[in-house]
Image 1 (spheres, rainbow, N blue to C red):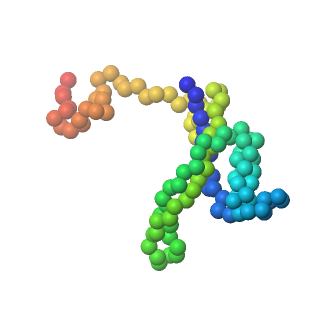
Image 2: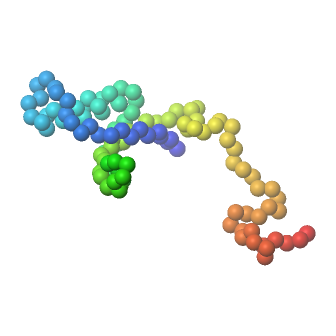
Image 3: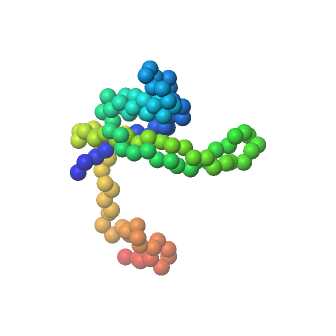
Length: 115
């Protein structure tokens, strides 16, 4: 089974100046190309762009306002020997003791039995 890690970065809002790019569309395309190529040089594969709603406050006293943010999603295959970030290599599944109630079993007074 393949195991991936993901990187999500905000899409650029403005195009950078680029030599030979004459129109705003050309400059923005060049900006995106440079960004995707920089991530690819670090081993990240471009996956997709998403636009997501975010609640954002403009000031301390104002209420939250919904805005939309566009993000770029990248992924790369995680090596089999490397554990997931934040996971410990010594993590094991928990085994229930014999006779212990299962999580789906109710734990109220009616569920308890005297041995």
